Length: 125
Image (cartoon, rainbow, N blue to C red; front, top):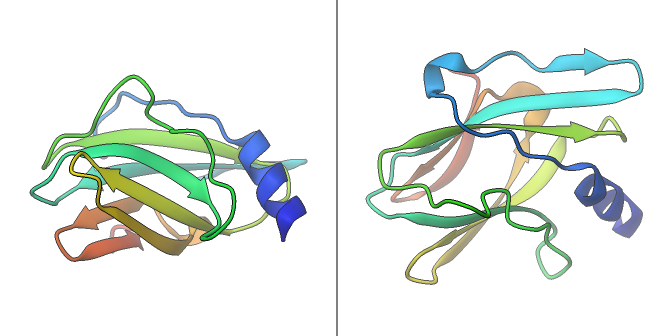
């Protein structure tokens, strides 16, 4: 699992800036996958960081190092996975220090949604 997390973290990149309406299906590559999704903050709180990794283990760097995600805002994101894996843990940290983690299947989602009650992935259906 450590090799999986290390490889996945090394392969992660962020592209941000578009609205939820611009979400696209994952674009498949011969040697890996690009996963695109919109991070949607439906909570009443500001998100300070978004990371991937493993609870009790190593977390990636912040995917949004130059911004925060205000309540009821969204951001388009994309990452590359050379291992063709689907399941990743995500960690959200709010400006008040609260942290939430959730395991999500990125092969079957278009949106990562944060509410006042937790984090979930959805394909828009």
